[in-house]
Image (cartoon, rainbow, N blue to C red):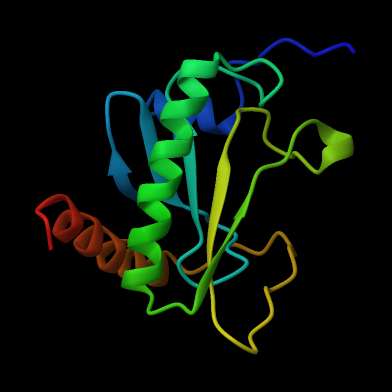
Length: 148
């Protein structure tokens, strides 16, 4: 098995460096969670580690554990904020596995009974809609952190 080296010019690395904007919903010293700009469901969030890692094949296990903890926390907040019936969590590795951005990331997608995921068309969501969903999710996460 050959794993390609991490490329620091990927879009998520640029977001982490502040070179590209993102609608952040949650951040710690280890992870960043932000709205997917091409959401397959309303409230679709991406969770990434701050450490450079291409995917599950090269991330340090301790960093992976932090990513998993954050994905779980964000999933609970997204489900509450979006009044979802369930959550789909996806994580892709290498091009053949469906990975498009080569910085490990976890997709958190709220789901509602009888509602299919939208196809990945490459169309970007309206920024105002992303900001509205982000504010709702941030409020739920803040309440959870406060014990609510």
